[in-house]
Each structure stands twice: as structure tokens, then as C-alpha cells.
Image 1 (cartoon, rainbow, N blue to C red):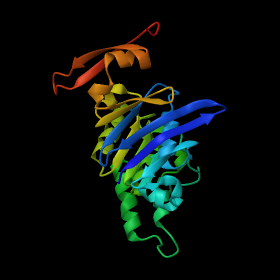
Image 2 (tube, rainbow, N blue to C red):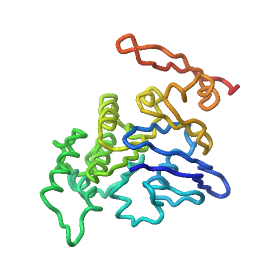
Image 3 (tube, rainbow, N blue to C red):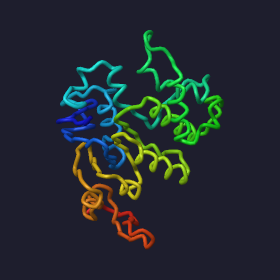
Image 4 (spheres, rainbow, N blue to C red):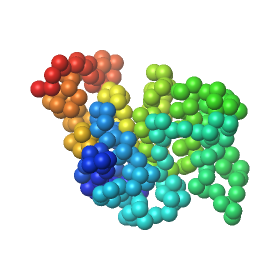
Length: 257
């Protein structure tokens, strides 16, 4: 199932936050969404998830407009992990992850052993099984982030949207979460700040001042000229001698040229 948008726009007090964004996320790919702070990444993700209704344009899930679909149906297809996602304090880790099953439950379809197995798999995927009985308020920021991702996995979406999922995580869990996302049987859109991590995505979408300014393979998008214009940095490309992968070393520019 493809996720796409056409001429998407959102403004606040006359200031464009997202302006004229058109793109199609390919089924099964991991698309990295990058750009400076304030470039519109989080707002775009919320509109793609159906949480924020566009002021202009439309989002399509397959051949159907997201705005025409019931919220329960949207939630069965798309899950969003936000940067500052919150959860009530008086619950356990397992309780929080079980919330991901909500779109699939009803009076005619109550909780079952299948739901318990799905929750257990989600906790295991983010290495939080041993924490399942811990109260939410005792978790660190990184642990909470991993639980939010587990809750999204428990939702069993076909499309997973993640807004800077590696925030608050140590380097081990940053790498493990990104490796997990790449291996999931889902279509993924991941907002990232680390451009070296973004290089591991199938394609990259670059946002700047609310506009989509480039979309393509990482090496096509992250050119020296574009990095200079968008991020105000110079970049030196190095090759990892162990695996031949390209890595960036950045230097701040005193002024944008």
C-alpha cells in the first residue's frame, strides 16, 4: 500500500510551515526525511499520518484520500511515533504497548491471545521485555522512546512514520533501532538529524523552509553544494575502509555563501 501526498500545505498566522510538498513513498522502502530545525519535517509527518488535516492538498493511502477514511482504518494502516509522545504516568510498560492494539479491538473482537503475542513480540523487538512490569514514570527518556516504538509496532501498521526516533538514545540503541526499522516488513518514513544515519536509508527527502527541495538516493541528495546551501556546512566525504561506505565529516560555515 503506497502513501503519497500532493501539493501539501500548512500555515500558522500566515507563515508557511509546509508548502507545496508532493511525494510518493514507495512500498517497502525506508525513506529518510531530513532538514534543518524548523524545516517542516514534524508537521509533514503529522499530515501524512492523518493526525493533522492539511490546509492545502491531500494525502493518499493507496487510491483513497486519507481525509475520507475512518480514523480506525487509518490507524490500522499507519502508525506515528512522535518526538514528544506522552503517555499517562500510572501505567506499566506493557499497558503502554497494549494501547497499540486499540484500532483492532471492538465489542465483537475483544482482547485475545493473539494480541498478547503481538505485544510480546513488539517488546522483544526493542529489547524491553524485561521492563514490561515497570511503571511508566520510572523509565528514562531513552527507555520511554523504545516503548513508544514498541507500541507503534504492536499496532501492526503497514506504514510506520517515526519523528527522530533516536532522540534520547545512546549510540548502541540508536543503531539497533535504525537496524530494526530497516528490517521491518513495513514502509517507513524516518525523520533524522544525523546525516550519516540518513545515508543508510533507501532514499532521502530533503526539506528546507517548508519546501521539499530534493528527493532521491542518498548520494544524489547529499551533495556538497546542497549541504552548504541548506545546512550551512561544508562536508568532507570519507570512505570507511572496512565496508566501503561513505561518511561525512562536517565543518560549520561562518556565513552561508
